[in-house]
Image (cartoon, rainbow, N blue to C red; front, side, top):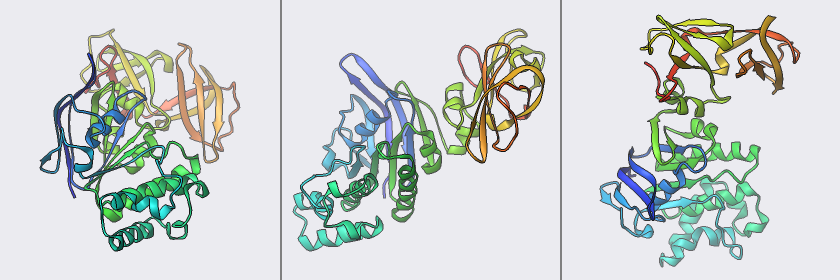
Length: 353
């Protein structure tokens, strides 16, 4: 088992720089997830580690080896692609063993390793089938199996579940978590789905425009984000952001009927703008006369998401119990846990602490 270290890693396409001096350590045996919106550089960074993209500057180490300019085949990594990349004319067994066959591994050894991987991934009944006879989830398991048989030091996953339907995504998420527990190998996983990131990761790396915004455990990022971007990206539904006004030792929020939130954080000058963040889970609704109106209610069984219109034109989302009887169009007051509110600089978006 081996960790991965990036030191001042930079990627340029001509004069355009897309990865900006990334410093990152992924510990031995850790499950690290790169997450961020489309175009943030997460897949590019993964491909740099794999050797599929050239590193323009900086250094990448796998274990103690400097692999910055090493061929992909020599890096000791295995990559699982979004598109499965299976050979359609080969059986499952042949697909899984093909990499070993190309490296002239003895046939008995290939049989043994394919058998072990097949057992882990519950593919024994499908070894003689071709990819066209498999479901999307089964094909993805074959792609993962092909990686396992190589015995890599590091597994790399590039959005492996994005082509699957919602139910299969949940099943495969559990499979990948179980696989990591069984193998104990270092895994780096790219996704834009923060639910996947929260459920799978030991460590999450939040990226935006080629920069790392924050690195930490899922609950650290959820409970203690460094800036507005991370606070809004981690958590579902997303955090509510409303405009506030700094007062002495407090922030007044016009959208919430001029609610005053006492705080000990370092606020800007009185009268200055402050962004207030409140999670939907920390808010409750009461039906009574108010300038705030329930616009749309999404019922999801046990919970409901209530979308509110405020007098200032700002929109709020509240997570409520699904059986709460409240019709769309009802005037409501919003109660919330003031101790859990977060404050951000209105210009820099940095967290005020």
